[in-house]
Length: 309
Image (cartoon, rainbow, N blue to C red; front, side, top):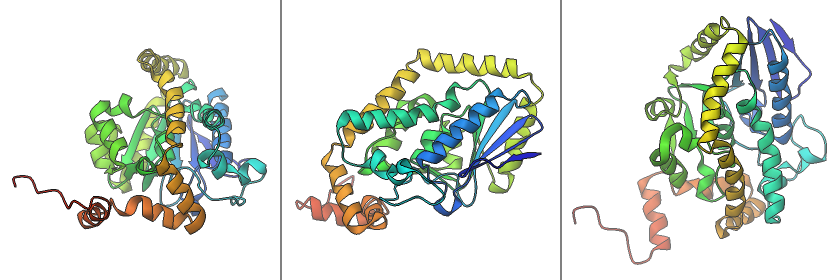
């Protein structure tokens, strides 16, 4: 097995016809900084060029696959360098001109789309949390395997915008896509398998072995055939509007960034800090009692009547 060390935010290993790319910011639950996304693109393209590689495994180090985009405010991110690293949170989730917002999100989207566009298959391996930007990344993969107890969702839809990478409808259809994006709720790996969001859910202890066995099969097939069959399916998605939808998703997210809800989020994040802002965003969704408290505050005419009178 060969391990490449030239990256700061990912680990790349190559052996037996596969490249394993591990998101490696475990102290931040592998939150996606701009640097990580660019290093990931470089590693994916390198694997696509390498004749020894038949397939790629995309996974995360530590307790979770990915906790989403890095929202660390206005300070240098751990292990990163350069002005863009300093300003990543502002670039992605800060008040700015609409077209400027769209441009920057499309710039980041180009990096993520490498998973979809590269010739060789990419297998997503989800454990722990797969949140927001983590879903933008992993659902571009060709096949996704999840731990049964994984938690998958896009809670930023509650106050901050929508997914700038929209593959939800293509995986689960409009009903489940709308449920996930109109509530911000999570599904487990087991539920994700049931609705078609992932190919298979397995006990966490079996996750790595299941993914490796899947890639063992691909390693016995010539990359030319793997590439042609991957591209056939992806071209079908494109004929259903898949690529156009990605560009529209970036514009829709920018549109939502102009909402008063987003301004509330920015103010709380700026004045109270990220932890409190996230608690404000998600707290009222936690259980029925908190939802009733929120409704009593915001809808003074009283709680809704239970079904049946």
